[in-house]
Image 1 (spheres, rainbow, N blue to C red):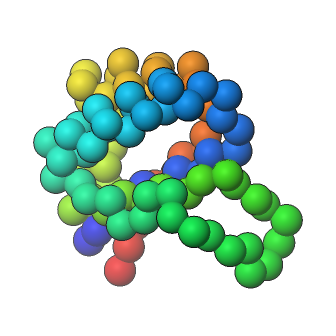
Image 2 (tube, rainbow, N blue to C red):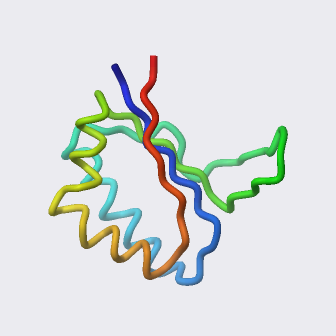
Image 3 (tube, rainbow, N blue to C red):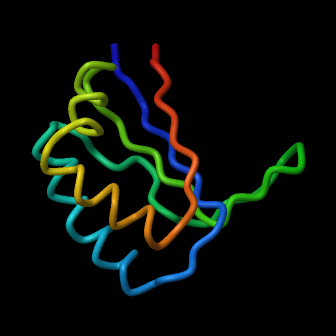
Length: 96
């Protein structure tokens, strides 16, 4: 059953670091069998007051694969890089 990592950037203060993060994370996601479904394109709030600056959705084969990417040694330094440049809420949801 697929799993979707949903990342919502709520604040960003270092665009250079975020560009590096995006470039390096593309390869890390691919190594774990993931693919980007949405990556910072246009968004529109239909209901509620939550207004993230950027939304990213990554599809993995299942929860284990998503967790494997997030907890991997190759993603650990990228997570630190992202955290030093932005505030991001991240969750994983099982698909259908």
